[in-house]
View 1 (cartoon, one colour):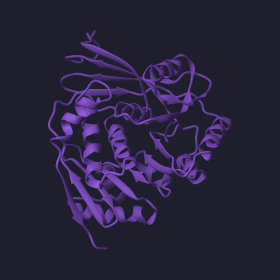
View 2 (cartoon, helix red, strand yellow; view 1 turned 60 degrees about the vertical axis):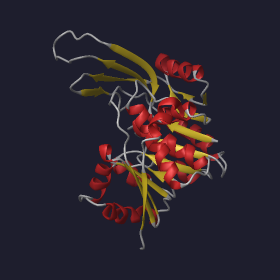
View 3 (spheres, helix red, strand yellow; view 1 turned 90 degrees about the vertical axis):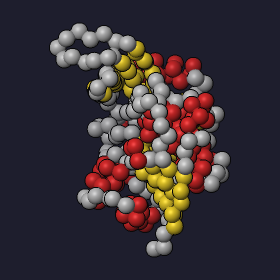
View 4 (tube, one colour; view 1 turned 30 degrees about the horizontal axis):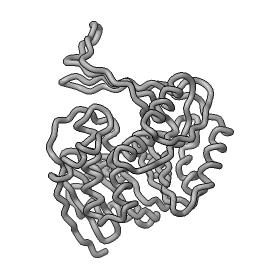
Length: 304
């Protein structure tokens, strides 16, 4: 079973408009309310591609209840822990020219709340996969994900940003930095595939099996020891960036659990991420099947 953890979920309120004028009344063309948070997005995409998961994490108040009802309506299983306060509301304003996000304030998570989640994670088995994704609330220790990984027998996927990624790596099945985050981590430009591969060697030494590097319009790389696979991004109209990276993780997991070849895993991952980027909300299976036909994947072999 795949378990996703969202420490910092949100009720996402997406607003689409032609133009945003500060200090003026702006009319909306379309609005969307949806359960959000990186781990929750992974569970939603997994559900869209017929893969079961159980969403873990924290919910609070009336916004938390909305998230629970939204997931239940999609037949997505969950085992959230209720905390005091209200789950945050994240607002995304998207016009034809610019996309702006406003992140809400998270509820307090106590030490007891953290220990309760840790107990659930400790019960997972070796055949399970645990997805740890998103930010870590300021009320929690910065290495919370690492401690979760150390406490479980499950294979662990880690998808978080910047210093949190570096601090929380622990024998992971997969990590998913983007190219800018890799460059910031090593304080240098990575201009070639060889330079990316050499940079990733440090992750192999830390027990990481796969590194999935998103490169925007340039596509994506799937790196493992001795191998690198590169894939293009299929063409389409960019609508929504929220959840695209999480959808990419879902595609990887679907391919990995079905024992697909690495090339096919990467193609499916890119198709899932692109389907979300070209959709309102998380992409659907029909869109994925359409896009994957236009994705090419190449393999490079490296000798250390």
